[in-house]
Image (tube, rainbow, N blue to C red; front, side, top):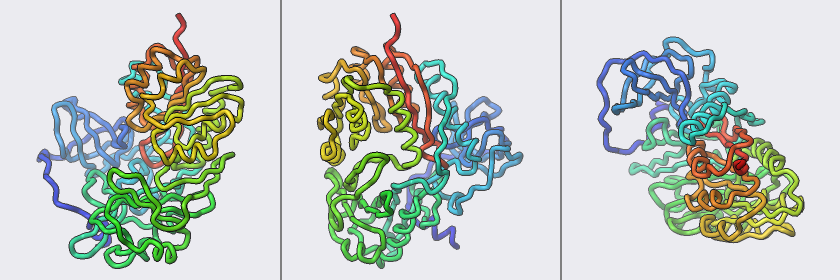
Length: 443
């Protein structure tokens, strides 16, 4: 009954054609970038199946077939791999928030290393060995920002949580016992669920909402509501939920606006103090991010007197630190909220421009050092073309998507990889952050 309630967010959807074959036995040999285990059928086709582990002999039911690959559902594990463990989270059987929690943590790191190397070799045409993956200081309870889907049902019920594994049309009910969330996020999420009222009428109206909670180092939490319409009782909600400091709303095609509570969320981030608006980006894993940022500073080296471009700079953390070390830094960022925070706390020697990186970057080249930190879609073609035409002595590329990283490195073949390291900012998932250092090819 509890499981039925947790997946009650299902909606009617088009049915996919599925295979009606008998179960097949497959030896799993790796983990794909989406978290599925990967093996081969007897006919040579690749098969992807969630909740399998490298080394498993698994019985699979084919569900989606294509000429060169298939997707399958795990029926049972016939021979469990040594890399498998019982998943610690009680929601894991159905929830899609995590994809590799059934792997031991060292096995997760090995899988991510292979994902990075496979992308760079296969897509990027490079010849690199699997890189070191720096582990997260916390395997669980590491996310300071978590997004939930909320759906109001026709019968008056409200379902809220994460999308189901392999079925994004269903919502699995999640409470604060989820092992992804920092403790303050879990506490406020439980408080919201208890206090949003019948039909979640204290939240803005709308059949479907996306709710994002972000906690600062002091345990205060902001809520960003995406979608819906105006309305709700936000001040009442803040008064009823301990730890909830502010509520923001972002409607389609508009910037996030404050609708209740404090205008900024103060955040201590290493040696920097930030004032975060509702939608400003910051890494979700503060402990692992500190390790990544220290590595970027080390890779940058002595920067005093250098001209640096910090592209896709966000709130300007790298730019601030490099300016403090004596560099002249220009930060490029499209998001107005992030740019406002970057400018508010700008150090002497750091300037920021708003606009797309592809429109602004060519005007700031050549430079002594360029830092690229694009979103999952990677750098725009105009960005890689500009760097290919005018390669800096050192380029540091920070990527959250090995596939688009590989594509962009292939486009910038006037430079070679001199250092490669990965960081596990997202334990229990297949996502991985990668830092690549490049320098111009020797003629």
